[in-house]
Length: 173
Picture 1 (cartoon, helix red, strand yellow):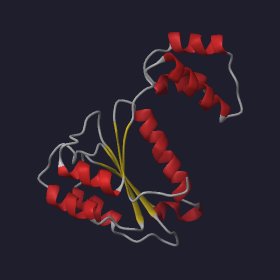
Picture 2 (cartoon, one colour; picture 1 turned 90 degrees about the vertical axis):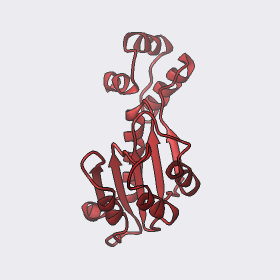
Picture 3 (spheres, helix red, strand yellow; picture 1 turned 45 degrees about the vertical axis):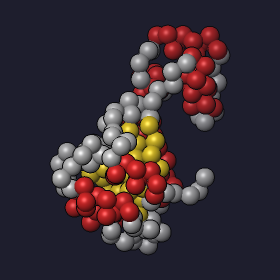
Picture 4 (cartoon, helix red, strand yellow; picture 1 turned 180 degrees about the vertical axis):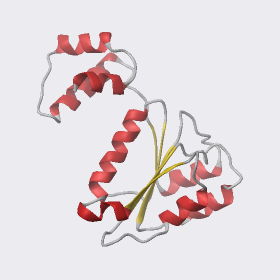
């Protein structure tokens, strides 16, 4: 809706939805030839939290905001670096949108989760469970691309390609 939070945590079984949400943030925040200056992508398995926070505290170049994305963010399951994380989450940079992509589970009882939820947005990404939700997802996905599919074809797609949304979307494309 035009407003971007300073912090996001996406976790859950449906990585496709998390990646889609990151693409939406990229489209909104990163414009033109300065895109590379205002975007940083890290892998939490190989980067230190200090590097991520340094990138998040870097000012954007000729833009209002900078986007920093961390895949495989391990810091929401407990870490030695919790105090460093808490310090940033309590006072995030107003010129950065920091997105953490965590695995299937995070510990919602821990302080980092609670503070991020207070100062940003936490979203659990999961596949639509009910048939009606799945059909609605397919219909909306097609509508955004100016396409239609009759109900029987949607049912066939759902039956034939059970599993993740990513496999269903790949088949639609």
